[in-house]
Image 1: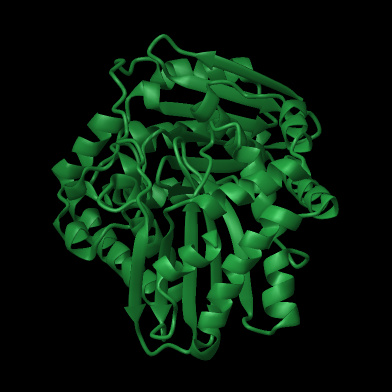
Image 2: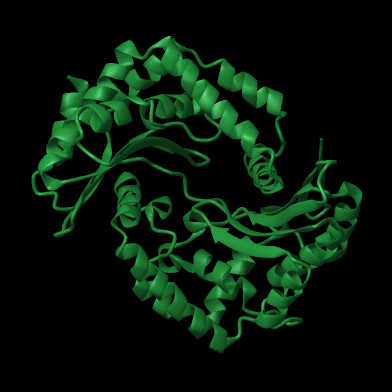
Length: 420
């Protein structure tokens, strides 16, 4: 398998990986623009724009887009994150040019029909309502806001309903003109692909875009704080987060391995102690999420109101204990889980395609898999214990609680317990 990388004269980047046994391919455009690139009055517009992707272009109606990709048995979709927006497809080898033409048409020639904008506005408002009715989704939005208050990276990707109701056609085109320059676009393809043919097609489709400066996102500043909302639900939902390594931080893999050992699976400390031994909850886990310049080590649990206080205290007690007695076996198991998850994911062209785009966005190169494996293998027990100790010494944390949470301890009390 061969990774090849090329940049057009206007800054448009192309990365491909040929996977010889395959007869299909995954490809797409990843845009270095997401929720954290919005101004306050634009909150939710990157996601709105993604929704409009398949609502028609100057060459194709929405139905024609759907029919053309499905006529060849393909699949096309999009998503928005805080740092990127992606438009991607999966097709057979012979249909790669069609998929690339469709995605280019969506990005370069959007119709933004006013009637379709109103239809999709209603869909997004329904989506916002659905998230608000899903406690274990919305609590993470509130945690993000508590961690990064008053900042673009702290706002929800969907945006508030009142903002979404006000977006105009000009607003949508304005965001495109600000953030969809060629230097912010990455064409990634993996599977049965020919690099030279894709470069030639990309030059034809995107080479005429004028280069323009990239708009930099506001730096993330973790501040922390507490968000608590009482509601008579069946379960109380608790999230607790600490700032940790971003993608470019040397401690990134230490954070990943720690979170896996601490709460990433059925053998993890949190799962074993909170659920298996004490029966305090049905769901509990920890995860380390990363952005370009910051990250969050998050604990989530859902439990009954009567167990919430004990579960919150147990979580910080286990975190404190991990700083002194995390074992070699636990760290080795977490390394194996992280490495296996990555390598298994690479058997999918869609996973490889996304990985390529993200690595180009972060590093402007694709580190060999062997380099990544070596970084994982280099993390030892002392690194993980030191990482946990750093979390315990942290003066700041973020917490979001939702449901019957009156009896939950305050964040200040938990951080004091952690540092004791």
